[in-house]
Length: 503
Image 1 (spheres, rainbow, N blue to C red):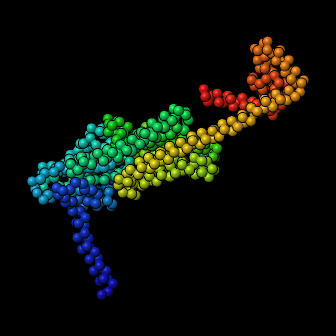
Image 2: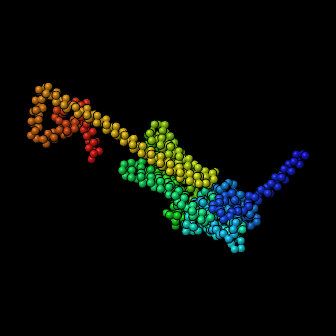
């Protein structure tokens, strides 16, 4: 057998294999009454419509059916794309007992989708637009009041139904499709609510906790941290569909614009918190100027989100977040290298945050599948990051308190040592009769007018820095020893510090 004959035979075998393999890839998904939850990612076929002009009649025709291709991964994820996408899935309900009736739901588990059109067969088997929704429409446009998109299915036993979903978005385009039995979906909701409650409960707890600390200590670091936590928490609620469900259900424009706006706002406060917390002016002027530049860029992105299109604002906000995270992380590394105590916690916090953000970003761009871990990676990273930042703030306060205690202890020892000096001076006065006589005469003259003596003390403060205090006696003023007077006035300063702390 020559090479040409061998090549021709190989091609025939390959075509035969493809002829048998392709139909297997597009067969209907069969399930029975015992099915509770079924991911449909591997059964979905996709048709990309770059112009967005395709209709349900064109895509459901025999010619249009040839344009569909199996989804390249377990979950369809096109990343940032301006195309419209048609998804087709065939479902075949094969119950063991035909008399058992179950209700079924089709779920599109990606809330930030601009437009979602659902087509199901009518009585004649022709695909018809059944529901039209998306976050570009009010929340009331959804068939069920849920953050994800749910559609009721009519699946007669023993029949195959072909369903179409058309999706488009100016942001990331993803379509994790799932089949639920109604009872299973209702039973799964408490777990979902618990997860959201845990995430947002921790964020709210940190917000309130640090608010009380800020009101107590009035440190600007806590204020910037509070604003960062609030902005980032609202951003998480926006992309999860919680915000449009509970906060602004009748404002689809803000539901879209809020995502890039809150991303930029969180970046702004994160950069300002870094400048204040690490003292980047001391670490390096170039580092501080870089953070100031990012703050200015964040203001620009916020303006784009409010006054221009959602798509460019979202892409600019994504790039801003990436640049901001890298610059803030670099600031933490510089702080660690220069021996800043709080730099360790800071680097650890932002390391966790960047890992979670990287996983979520790769999922949005289509490089990772849409799963629970990738979808909520940024949430998990954010919670851990804020926990470590709270530890860093607490460590900073504890360290400052420790230094203050050590300072007070040192002042106390100086006070105890300096209090022994008046007794030594009185002994010296008794040992020198002239000094004792002068002190006795000064006391007699001063005894008649205590107020005048007090006024004279105030006027006799030397002009070389004021080493004397009002409580010093006449002997200290007549016999001035700079070192001794400086030590006595240190005692007075210590007494004033203690009085302020006790008052």
